[in-house]
Length: 152
Image 1 (cartoon, rainbow, N blue to C red):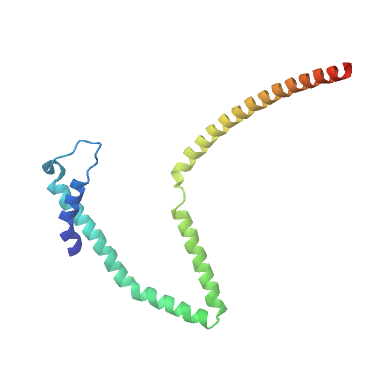
Image 2 (image 1 turned 180 degrees about the vertical axis):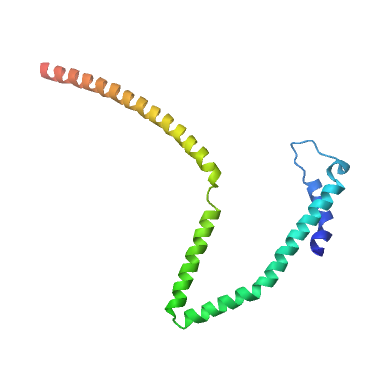
């Protein structure tokens, strides 16, 4: 908690010095707003303190579980192996669900894909028509060559 609070003013100075070149550069009094600074500093420090405390509290329990799992696997227990596979499968499923598209955007994606599909179908029809015209031209030229070769 203290480290976040102590480093916060230096982070503000760094942010001030690294402003975008394309925009109008703000003066320090315009850039530095004490209310925003206090809010972001206190929330950021609290967030990190909670994360560190949770890790400190959970680490011994996780260590015991991993140690017990390792000992069980090392002894050749098929039940431990089965549980490990099930847990890894559940974790992989949860991670895939967490990083997949959100349910609200699926309809928009389907609509966009339908529009893209319509455009592709139109282009495909245009290409097929162009192909048929070229084939007619080729057949006509082939017929001419056949007539010329028969005459010669």
